[in-house]
Length: 149
Image 1: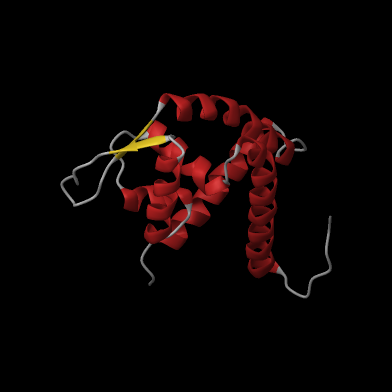
Image 2: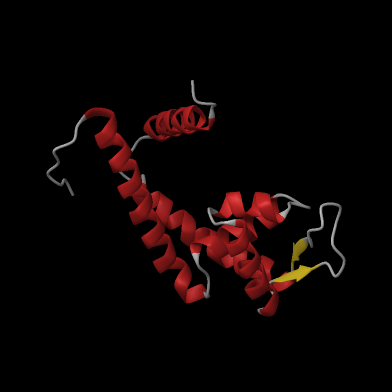
């Protein structure tokens, strides 16, 4: 779907990346909704599975939400029995969270559904295209993370 635009060059690229991200987020939410998950919840559960002992600040960054939103998200996951939170705060005053067996089973069902969305997004690309796109986007991300000149 091409849309007319008055922008060109890097600005148009930035808008295309944002548009793609918004559509990807929408498709992932549509896929995860029947499983009772949102994209931030899925990202949080995936980060907890992949990174033992991750703190709430890092979880928030990985799930693309604020730290305050992460606390609310974790409370909801705890109430659903998907995470178990430590009773006592850890070294930075944060309560760590661990996945429950129910969360692991849910992730096992969600992962192929999310992969199907990404496969759909990249279906018109070769493996080389995917690899190169990953490399280019990582470089763009890293440039934005670097201190401003």
